[in-house]
Amino acid sequence: MNSVLPLIKNETIKIIKKKRFYVILLILLVLVPIFTYAQMRSAEQTRAKFHGDWRLEVQQQITDNENSLGSDRVPEEWKKYRKVLVQQLQYYLDHDINPNEPNGVTFTREFMANSITLFIPLLIMAIASDIVSGERTTGTIKMLLTRPVKRWKVLLSKLVALYMFTSLTVVAAFVITYVISGAFFGYQGFNLPVFTGFQITGSNVDLSAVHAVPQWKYLLMQGGLVWFVSLTVASLAFMVSVLIRSTAASIVVMMAALIAGSILTNMASAWNSAKYLFMVNLDLTDYLSGTPAPIEGMTLGFSLTVLSVWAVAALIISFLVFTRRDILN
Amino acid sequence: MNSSKWIWRIVSIVSILATLLLLIGFVYAIKDIQYPQAGQTPSAAQPQENHEAKGPEAKKEIKIAAIGDSLAKGTGDNTGMGFARRTVNELAKDTGKKVILLNNLGINGLTTTGLLPKLEERGTQYVLGQADIILLSIGGNDLFQGAESAVKGIAGTSSTATGLELDPKDLLKGLPKASTQLKAILERIRAINPNAWIVYIGLYNPFGDIKDLQIPGNQAVSSWNQAALETINKNSNMMLVPTFDLFQHNLDKYLSSDHFHPNGDGYQQIAERIVQAIR
Figure 1: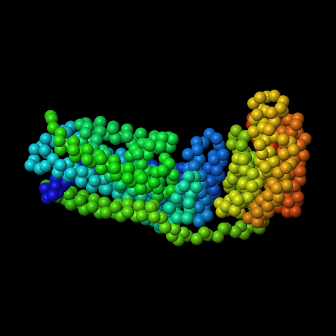
Figure 2: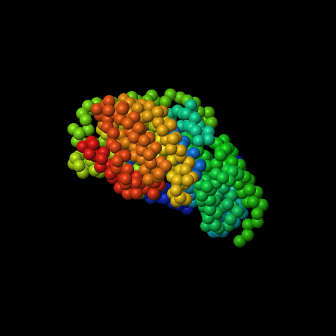
Figure 3: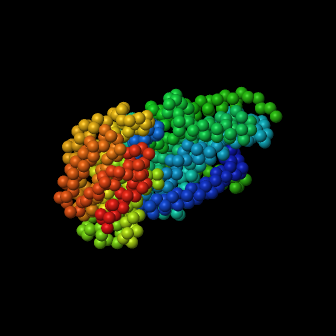
């Protein structure tokens, strides 16, 4: 094991020196202010419409959703989602808590919940898709493999470095989002209560287990779930990077898979076995907020299992292929 | 090489810390989702009391809330304004004061049975408690249940009233129960907000041009309005705005294409009547 640590160190320095991580930070620094500004404008508009009273806004949201329940044009699964939403909003109103209180922490929470399926995985891919195929594009892989170390150790060092940067990326995303949105909305809001524990059976919400969590703890839990998803995506992108020689192609493959996932979640509820695909299971934070899962029968345990199986399979394939393949040119 | 050393140290330490932090969060999340414990939820705050005792006409700013069925919502008005927003506009023009529509809580297809539990919801109570004027429209769906589909059938075949699903005699059947519930609704709203003016929008007969339904429809609507007046007349801050006469001979002009809801002009007429009553 002693010989792996220097290799990990080497990989880490390569990632930093090749400025992959800076690219991620730069993307965050550019995009987050844009999202924050857009959010601020729309919040200002609704606030003006409801004279700054969030209760009126929430009540109107409830009424609008109830109205759409009567329409035959609304698909059944959307109705189910809206029924659940109505009950949750009602719960917030009953306890006199604003679910969308504007502050930096709430924005971070909302933003992370929205970026778990596409945005964060995309950032992870910036490192993961390049980590093996990049060496082959430039030809440096031969130098790496001519050293007197076992091939699996080389690959393992790359994997560990990748996981390290995955953690860093997730934390960086949280921190940057909080710091930037805080400048717009204010930095307070860590102790605001958020409700979690809505248990959904059919279109009914079981409120017996609902409890309030301070927002900082909610963020922590959310971070953990985002992290798990990121590790899975990292493992899969890692495999693609081993299998495909060109970095661009491996990014395209992963992107296609992720986008397919977001399309499928919108329309796959009729196709039940789609729930075994990893990309449908990425939205783990839904289980925390109590949003109905896209397909009947999905639970947190189920999604974690599916993601783990995919990740482990990807890693096994990566190691098998990498240790056996001839490296030409 | 020195910079590499520092890069490695910083990155490794920070990433290990980050991993630990996220791992803790992950464990918490699983625990919380898989074994949720109903902990203490913050106790519900008391509903706000409306301390102002003056009538709406004395205030600088008039707050209006609309509640009830599709008429309150404004179904059929292709500008989406309905009588609620039109009343706000007209009243603002008329009084020169600032008029605010707090919320439009109208829900398509709502009956008196559906409205009663809504009045117990905190959000509804909050909105009604703040309003100076409460516009209420309810009862049409109680009275004409099934009539809408019957009319659709007629419009589709464009024949005379042969395939009529609505039995004229049924119109009066649900009346006693529904009017008791209307009484309960009016009293409940009064209890929620003792100071606001409650404006009840009287019913009209959308089937005045269908031979078999004209007379029973008229009878049902007027006995309904009469039943509503019995409660309303006992309270000085409640009023009924009649619409029956408006629509009686103007169904072509004021009804929308579904032949049940008013169109924009119809809502405008109702709104003008409301403003005449409350200004």
